[in-house]
Image (cartoon, rainbow, N blue to C red; front, top):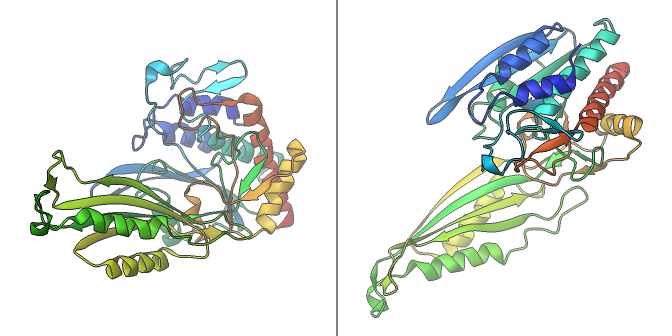
Length: 382
């Protein structure tokens, strides 16, 4: 058997700040192999990005294959002196497990492993399918050498997953209140408007790029992309940086730059938004450069068998009816949705990425029971 708290602590004690693994995969791999999982330890590389270690582990060989997905990398601790405990000591204080990754999401990874081990043991490993874990060390980073490449490796090697739960901390305030069944897409833009530098007293001899930049940003900030729909909140546009790098008050700059981010629902695609932006900017005219990067399209796993399964397990364990939501940022579910139905459910996110990140011991125990209940319901219906 695997004790969820003990494994949570062992994982937190590995300072696996992206992209460092720092031994986290070794800890998880040893625990999983100890209960019969076959583990595939893989490191991926790419140009101008750090190498990242990942793990795919499977118990069983039959279909269907139920997958738990998550990450062992964590964000930096910030001001370590501001922590009340060592952020990598995994101390328990007043019923709370403290440490970087306690909430996001090493404790959920431990709950995956513990739930899978206890479920399989109760069934004597005869449950009519397989359980797998897809674990990356690149979720908090550029996400280039992580889940995407593991999924490609799986496809190339005949590893098929039929349903997936991602263990991100989905609950705003208390365990059981929210399941994520989709996410908005995210598109970022880097805009540079070129002009001609000159003296501010002789503007006719220069070409000031700032007014054109302001007009272009006005197109974005004055636009209502949509009003939301049954499953998604309205798309949003945020200007996140404006800069001319000008230290003088009497010089018209040669260029002006801005950065913006758009979170869009399923009424749009990255391509449709980019096409609209370029059309509007072209209409304003002038010399400009625009770089667009869409880090993930919006997606929705419609309410149905998977969300019903998760909701039922939450009700059974906690007596709570969760909200089915698409709020928040992005996660690696944006890659998994191309392979199978996927939903997200994990711990409470109140302290993720903060000083004194922590999670209640009772929540780790309850989450483990919920994951085991999900497995029980999934394979009973297979």
